[in-house]
Length: 152
Image (cartoon, rainbow, N blue to C red):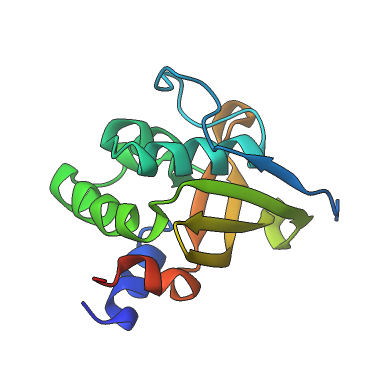
């Protein structure tokens, strides 16, 4: 797949604290059952953990927009295809949130460094507050992580 197609898939779905935190991106051992997360950072880390574990259901609970999880507004086949593409890009061993800053429309931009073996990439995730004050990953920039999806 070419990168423009991949980027459009993610964008179509869319639907400054300078703190460094390193985590294994495993906010908990159990999959989330409530849509969204309590903070932008937790939304991103939960999303990344679900991608790492190849858990489509967990990804679909935290990926969304201001209206709520993507699983509530997308056809299941389309949702799963997009999640599978994102899993390739976001498969990692460690994730470090480099910063979390405000953006337009009360969104947050989180700069995240991912590492997988010798590969390393930093990209931006965009989190938005949804129903009941829960946070969702609206989108992320895939291009900086393109090497994560290439065959070695």
